[in-house]
Image (cartoon, rainbow, N blue to C red):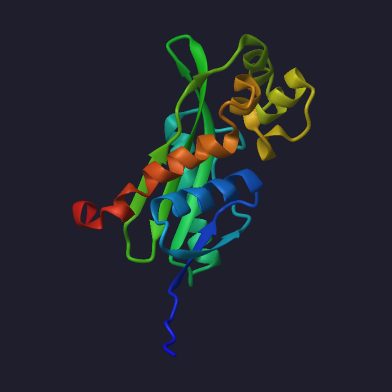
Length: 184
């Protein structure tokens, strides 16, 4: 009987939010269906405001989370940072998220969610100082929506929930790892 070593790569997700952990798992599984991964979520700081208010700030928060996770768990193969953000496009407020993946081999992956426009009731609460999750909870009478379906799930009636929303961005961020010969 031959025994084969299963190479299991470790992925550290810089969040303990179950939505973000699940999105990372699904993204890796979809992009690398024949490979084995061990996933672990860890609490990290983003180094940006609690509610990033620009593309740059949200991207930096995701990158900081990936870097901070690599410091906390240096023995891993991949470190995943995810950060939601809001910004103004023309005269309206939009929401989006960034995913940044750092690898042991020094390759970086970056992906972004789609953008959606926020309704005026949520925008008004954000302008009063609430973050997007708090505003969602108030408008929809929910509790802790960022750890469930999020704004995108609430606004689409779960046609796209927050897990699916981040999974697509995760897949985009994994493109360089699927095609390292094109990104080295």
